[in-house]
Image (cartoon, rainbow, N blue to C red; front, top):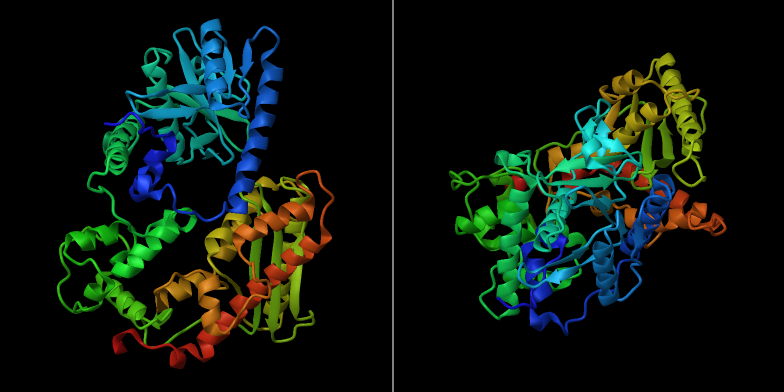
Length: 548
């Protein structure tokens, strides 16, 4: 194996084909798309989060503690040198450590924080996502207690599944072992998350993964596989990973390269993704054409199928060949309708909170002006002002429902993919339970369980096959709707939000606030157009799947 093959911790979580392309010498001159501004913003946010955490930790540990800060802006060689000097000096805490490249183990990488114990160092990650949920059983210490020996089962928190965190810690554990710096005994690693209230400690040798494997077992298996893929690419050997469309493709810089290859070969993953595409290939079905030619009434091949049905896959292939975005899977299209209708769309900023609840009232006149109405906070999240805007939204929403019921009329509220709205309905009720006007969880539960809350995403999923995805930005144009802003999308709205609230210390941009409101209004208009189209025209405009 060539010593030039070095893998970072992320390689074990990335697509195997991406790992191949990253190490293929032929790709070195191929231009890649420019960096995604939203991705860069996430990196900047994570950097700011880390700097705030290290400030709090250094302040809390006191002057007796030995902290060594290794600036990430330094050249790699200088960072490695300073890390090695910190090891030699026995530093208690090494922030921003970059370990020497491990030419034998083919690993490279750094870590946010290394904490010295009596027998060696343990790695601690600082991440900008949530790492625990309400529950019990997580192993934690207080934020400023960085001694893993003090960890105890937490009666208020359970571990939120973040497998990449554990795999990163396993990578670092293996590197520390290579250089004789790892803590002796049971392997542990810590994570400080977005809430920054505890250190979550993972036992990397515990059999908590599927099949009773440990995080270290899973990491070792994945690393060996990715190393074989990378080595074959780097040395000109037979490729061990061919392109196949997976969820990661949406944000991969190599997607344009893979898309060309997949389209030219008419690869089956263009309509059936993930492991199902691999299962089809193993069954001898490699192209969309081969899949479309199968008999939907025949006995399907023996496969471990994970998504939809085999018949659906065949019909999706036929829709793709006919250049149809959607086809009906049911003879008739039905959508629950009410006399008074409200379309709802929520805008959130990552895990920080929901800053905007947009509504569109239509149907029978009950004395409230029809049209768009927004309930927003323009204070940077997280903020207690979010409770005020949510309470105002819920008060208005409840008033519309009650007036509708009092008039003897039926009420329906619509969203597109209730998972998002429900998350923040329940989350807001829980976080702001003491704020006046915020409903209790039981009230929220009663509403979301009722027939009055209609998830149009579910309606689309149940009644259509969608050959190019089921996102609102894909389906609503079929119904004749278009967004006014050419950049409209969730990722772009994150950038607009930062400017709208002056998150980086700049003056809040009121034009960006108006842009967000227009975007949100278009989203609720899109759901209205979609449900009306499903009621009135989809049955005649969209081909029935059995007619393909």
